[in-house]
Every structure is written in C-alpha cells, then in structure tokens.
Length: 429
Ligand code: UDX
Image (cartoon, rainbow, N blue to C red):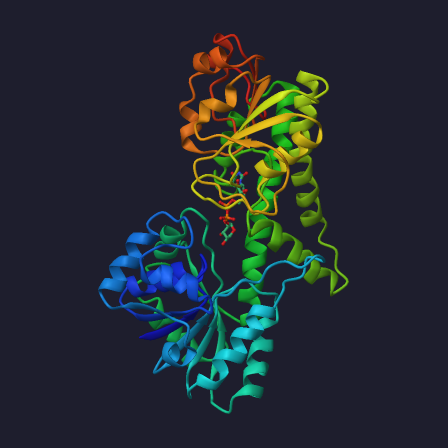
C-alpha cells in the first residue's frame, strides 16, 4: 500500500524504511528541510545499526521517498502514520504540540476511508482526541488507530522487522484490516484491542521493564553487601520462566529517551485520575539510588573526591547508540565534577548536547582515561570495554580503583593486576 509517515526521527524513519523494505510505497514527511536534504543524500540523522543500508536500498528501489510536502506525501495514500516526538514536560506530562501540528498539517489532505495511524508514544486517550480534532478539521470519513512503537535504540531496525508482537488499537474492522495489510509481511502475533488499551500497553510495557531493572539494581546492592554474586542470583531468578533472563543486568540505572519519559508520564496519567502507582514511584526512587550508590562507593574508596582524577568509560545511555538523553553516565560525570573530581571520559559514539556545560575532558581513545587516574569508572556497556586489559590499565593509573558499574570485567584478572575491583554485586568467584 501507499503509506505516508510523518516524522523522520528514530521511530518514523525506522518504521518508514522497514515498511518500504517489506514492499510498501512509503513517503516520509518532515518539516526539517536540512534533515530531508541529508536523508536524500544518504546521510542518516541518527546512529542505528542497519538503518543506512535499509534506507539506501529502498530509496534506490523507489519504495522510499522524502518530502516536506504533505500534499505530495499523502497523495493516494491508504494510511498516514504519525511518528512525531512527544517530549516530556516538567510535570511529567507529554508535550502534544507536535501531534497537534501534524494533525493540522495532514487534515486538508485526508481522503475518504484513509486510516490515520498514531505510532508515537502518547497519553491514553490521545487516539480519541486526534479523531475528534480531525473530524473538526475535515469532512472526510476516516479512522484513527493506535500502533505503538516498541523499538529499542541501537537495535530499532531489528526490533521493527522481528518484533515479539504488534499492537493494533482499532475501533473498526476496516481499520484493523488496514493494519493487517500493512504488517502482513511481519511474522508475529498481531494483538487487536481498543485504542485506549493499545496506548496503555506502551506505557505499561516500559514501566514494567524499568521496574525490572530497578529491582535487579536493588538486589545487586544487597548482593554486594552480603558477598553474594549478582550474576548467579540474576541467572537463578531469570531461569524461572515467569521472570525471564532479560532486563536483569545491574548498572548505574536506566536512562534514555523513553524509560524516564514514559515512567513519569504513566505517573502523571494516574495522578490525573487520583491514582498513585506506588511500584512505579519506587522504580524511579531506586533508579535515583542507583546513581548515588556509585558516588557513595567511590567516596568510600577514595575519600574526598575533590582533586581526584577519575576516568569515565561510557557517555551514551547504553551501548550501540550515540544518544545521551537522560544518560546515567552524563549524570555521574556531573556528580563527580560537582564533587570536585577532575574527569576525563571516553565514548565511541556519544553525541554530547551543547546544553551539557559540566567541565570534563573527552578523550579519543579508551585507555587515555586511565592516564594518572586515581580511579576509573565504567558506566556504559560498550563491548569494547570488555576488552580492557587490567595490566595496561594498572601501568597507566596512579590509583588502583576500577569501578565497574556494568560488571563487564573479571574481578580476578583486575585484582591480579594489583588493582581494586568494585562491581555492582559482582564478586570474585
Ligand atoms: C526502551 C524499550 O526497551 C523499548 O521497547 C521502547 O520502545 C523504548 O524504550 P530503549 O530506551 O532504547 O528502549 O532502551 P533499553 O534497551 O530498553 O534500555 C533502557 C534502559 O535500561 C537503558 O538505560 C539501559 O542501560 C537500562 N538497562 C536495560 C539496564 O540497566 N539493564 C538491563 O538489563 C536492561
């Protein structure tokens, strides 16, 4: 089918390119002319494994185009997908400005029987709101469905093409049929439900995953205090099929552009209905504790951090992405610098926002963070950090503390190099 996609961020561009790849005719619409020019030149706006190849392949095949014109993009389209951002506001609610702008721009180009697909993560009830808004802007007979994205950064293309399920939030058989046609080539369960249920699935999904991570971070701190090995404990509980092994890796806390936004948004949604989601509140509290625990432990080993040279390995919020939004690594750099430490940091891909003004030195090779360092701190689980050679670290460091907040290294080999290993519940076997 012909599909228009509004927004060429990591959701819109990945969705558009993947749907073109499975045979649809896709036109991605964006208002950012610079971004469109770069996309037409094959330059990606984001760092995503496999994205450049799949975009170029489908542009060359004539299945994927880019335009700033809603008229051109929506011409003869059977469906139009809204994939614009819904950034958090200070009170935790979602900023609906870009959704509203997209509705106002697409309305004049609606045709009878067209299906509007809300792909963006939106507050529950948005589907009804978009339908009402479009009815006020257009006399055409259309439907609005919810098809929330479940893409993880760094593996978004794989997650789109091989999802565990796809959620169809619809109110008519015709709209359901349209989504079945759109995802016909994607082999997975298609779960059909009401739009409100589909919208809540998205928030509940992320809130649960964030809670699972906060839980294992809590247990890792307990394991550390008790001398238990968190990797064995995580394996022990993860083998229970009711729990599962994923999202049981302890670290400095969850971050990124989704978990923090979505957990705060679901709390805001609940508060609007005089409900208090105690478990989600606890997940946020535990997540903040995960960061301060690292600082407390650093102080326990080093004493006053003022003047101490600390090398940080990792700046992005997780591996395989350049995204530093709500990155625990950036927050820890800020906390360390605020405590007076002299911080150097390395990351293979992170793009640091210009708004981050905390003084620190970024180096271009991972071992450089060890030079004369009193301590090094691993904050992001880049695979390259697993190859760090303890003896080489020891030669360069002034101090001895290796704080491995992602449990990437082997405590025994670190200690054999004469260094002190501090993981998160990871003890020498
Ligand atoms: C998440 C959801 O997984 C995805 O389905 C949704 O569409 C968007 O939000 P993403 O934000 O890209 O995706 O990151 P994810 O891989 O889920 O990790 C989220 C955070 O949890 C990261 O900060 C990560 O470092 C942390 N995490 C994840 C852990 O600390 N331990 C784990 O075991 C897993």
